[in-house]
Image (cartoon, rainbow over all chains, first blue to last red; front, side):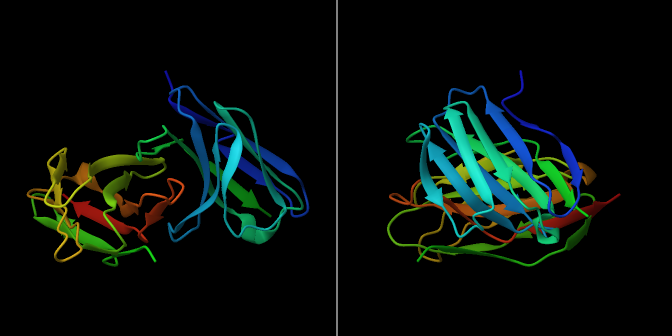
Length: 112
Length: 113
């Protein structure tokens, strides 16, 4: 029944580790996004894929690498995690021609 | 360029008080405007939207009117409840922007019983 799901919900890890976050949507949307939300609730777009093609690639360290195996999935891999990567990461999706984005519940990443 | 400015929070109100959260925007052309709400511990969800001038979006007792002359999209509710405590985000979307939403900084609302 879940529209946009993310795993894991919580992720606690050490500096220098590599981790992945997964996102899946069952809404039939063709565009998916990754956002980072900091502790002050500031929301920053990181990446967007449309039909598996990267269309938005904001100024993000190249330690972050998105991958979209198909239209329904968008994963985010982070290499060499740093303290400043601690944040909530949200996945979202939308349908071509419509601007409303649907958000997942978020992945709370804490780097120690 | 495109930008969204929201009033800074936190906003603290008593139950049944009137709520206004100001949002103004800068954009070329005719953007669509949105209010999203984020309840504690959850993702964002669309609250309401308007796609052209003078449109009024409404949902769950909240309203916002797209005012092109003042480039504003202020969020209002006549009588807030404790369950309205959340962070509210104003956003705009402009054609040719790769469907990127331009977000305000968010306004935190706390409603006390």
